Length: 172
Ligand SMILES: [Zn+2]
Ligand SMILES: [Zn+2]
Image (cartoon, rainbow, N blue to C red; front, side, top):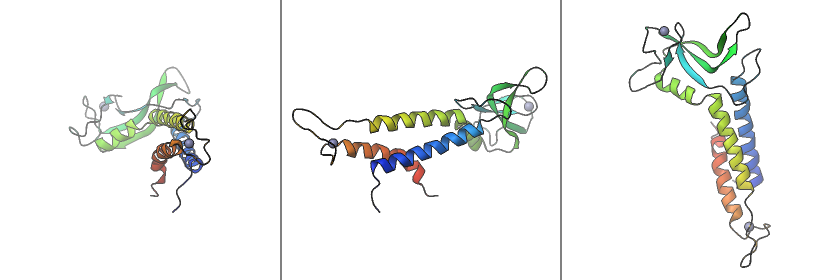
């Protein structure tokens, strides 16, 4: 297996981040409303009373409210949208009605809502650009023109990019 070059790694990372961004944006799409560019935040509420549910796997097996007997819950946007008809607002119902959602799974989904994913995409793109922007050594004692790299700039950049690319190379 050949070692991928820095441009190849950068392409893999960009493609992976683009796909993450696309899915997170589409998951934030509430039909008939403009997409929230920074992505929706998601939380769990009971379907009958809109009681907030804080997932706690240590205490509750399933996503369940504390203040009522509801066993049906939904995953909703924190962001509210104008109702299509009449007054008031509604959330986006990401998962409108669920039963017996394991607490750890429900908590994991809410923690990885579109807002979180899009924030990570932004951070990773910035990190990628930062790493690619590292200069070769150019000074009194040592000078590297980059082709081939005689300082350790390329090795450092490759290390960072390989780490960023790793999640997209699971092959599962
Ligand atoms: Zn309830
Ligand atoms: Zn160099």
